[in-house]
Amino acid sequence: MILRIKDSHWALNGFLLFIIIFVALLSGMFGHVDLAPSDVAVGLFGPADDPVAIIVRELRLPRILLAILAGASLGYAGAALQGLLRNPLADPGVIGVSASASLGAVVAIYLGLAAYSSVAIPVLAMGGAFLATTVLMVLASRDASVLTLILAGIGISSLATAAMSLVMNFTPNPITVQEMVLWMLGSLENRTFDDLMLAGPFIVAGWITMIGVGQGLNALSLGEEAAHTLGVDLKTLRWRVVLGTALSVGATVSICGAVGFVGLVVPHIVRALIGYEPRRLLIPSALLGAILMMLADILTRLPIGHGQLRLGVVMAIIGAPVFLYIVFKTREAMR
Image (tube, rainbow, N blue to C red; front, side):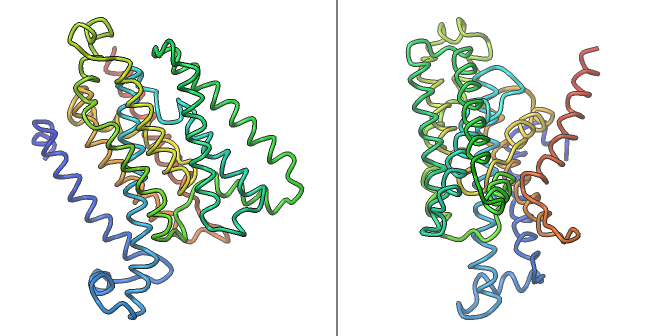
């Protein structure tokens, strides 16, 4: 199987699609009420007033779909940014979108807007992401070089993180602070189709914005001068990747919180399977990101003492050792 996967990225895509279906079925089975595979099928296609159908359609299906969208967005954006910046350590957080979206959510919690509307937190989180993108475009509009994008992103991310700390510092209610911290740790619990309808269009818009960037990323891997010689509009390529990342990742963070390591680790795993060509990494990274996000979400449902695992914590526990292993193997290969 591994040899066949290495021969073609399309074989890998097909294999990952099969795994997505399998893991989605597992996700539909596990929860406070465990269901058999036949129960999941009945819940999907049976009468709407059936208790099992309510569990599957209203509680677990939106959670599964959001996990797929979120993981695919983070994986695709991570692969695209690593190709654009030609930096294997790049991830969606490098342009400041994740931190700015988190800031918007923290402000919504601080103001108590969630008590008036269930969409207040995601709306303000997406507003923070769009504000960060606007500032990034203004800062790098005249010289949209890779270095300028990175430095502007680091500055925006640092400023957003400092603003979050300031808001939490002035929050008088410790329960509100706890709510902020739990949100930032990430979760897909209690998400509904309303959340899906709110974030889905922005996620899809981000994907559409990045359609066709693979060929330009391939050319860019040869260097900026070579890419320019091959007819690649580098400025347009950069803004398509940045804007697409801002749309899809900003909407993702607004729904599930700041979840790290997906965009960083997933492209490295895919490279080990099909090589280093940036264009071929994009779709497999999206599919593998969806798988990892669903698996992490399943793990958050496990009973651990008196608490509950959070999505960002689980992903860090999974992602950090994988990333360290990749670094170790890369170091061994360079000797």
